[in-house]
Length: 439
Ligand SMILES: Cc1cc2nc3c(=O)[nH]c(=O)nc-3n(C[C@H](O)[C@H](O)[C@H](O)COP(=O)(O)OP(=O)(O)OC[C@H]3O[C@@H](n4cnc5c(N)ncnc54)[C@H](O)[C@@H]3O)c2cc1C
Image (tube, rainbow, N blue to C red; front, top):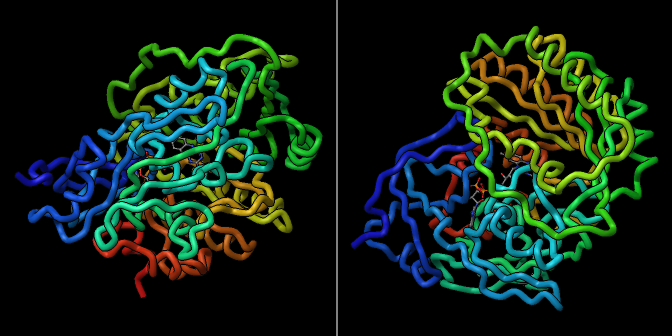
């Protein structure tokens, strides 16, 4: 019996790309080598986590997919040594539920807990503490990988043939990640002490970032309809308190695709002013559970439907500090002029810690993430203009969020791409990789 008997539709978070194809759903680590030797295996396959990547890096139209969610077990947890080894289909939500009652925590968290450990490695995800903790891969001690040409193997940071560095941030192209061993941090409480501070110019934002450099986490939301205005939020782990995992309450679900006309310049401006007003009213530090601070969007299930049935595109870039301010300003000006602002415009700072992956997205500088309702060519043209600004400032885009950057631009932004291609498993391919490695 073939593992690829089922045909399913798989998509990504932005809802601009999806495809129907053969999907294998292995349940045990021992099933993974058989996925490659399966006589019915499509010529190429790609691992899929929870599809929280926005564009086409987690899709393989014309080939097969391997959903890794069935591999979700803990293999080893050593609280004294602060090490977790777990199968790659385990989610950050599941890992935190087990770790937090023991006072243990994942050192790097993306903005949603619905991400698998394999997906976190494959995109070398970052959090709101990059300046001090770097990206997820920096905490990975060992990876269990299964390849079509080398079978099951282990790779670690001192690996001489560079397969570990290629796998971290390698977008699933170097093999199926079977398990991940991660170093953990210790916390005294699962609460954070959080403070919001309003700013009215981008210079103020930079001052706040510097002045609160000793906070554990720093992030800012900016109002795209009024460049310069925003809210800076910083947080630190509470020194004492309970160690409780996030509540398992059922999130409110968006029941249908929001009609596109509801998302226009006027509603955008209203939303942004209301959001800022709400945050501004809070004075001084407050205590908040980590889940509300780290995963604010997880409270609304399927929030991606709010952008209507054509979906949306997320645009995330990083720009080196020299020239970063001017480039971000120019991007906001272009966006505002196009009348296509973003509901969620998030700014974070990346530090100078060495990147663990050949293709890790973070580099020292400022990172800006924006959401745009998909309006077809008009949106693509706007994003292309933003690409030009990012490129001329020496920046680059985050592949996990992309579904349209040109091969030329990508290869310029990631000159190491050939080194990943040299280590790619020949039986693995993705829509994104095919597009950006075209000659
Ligand atoms: C609301 C929201 C907030 C987010 N915030 C952040 C953020 O703050 N920082 C950040 O860095 N990212 C962020 N992201 C992006 C997200 O963290 C990444 O896209 C992540 O990789 C998604 O993981 P996934 O398990 O859904 O994997 P998928 O999206 O399904 O796949 C992602 C990649 O991982 C590969 N992959 C998955 N599992 C395996 C495996 N076992 N073996 C080999 N390859 C595998 C896939 O082939 C693909 O290339 C956010 C996404 C959302 C929706």
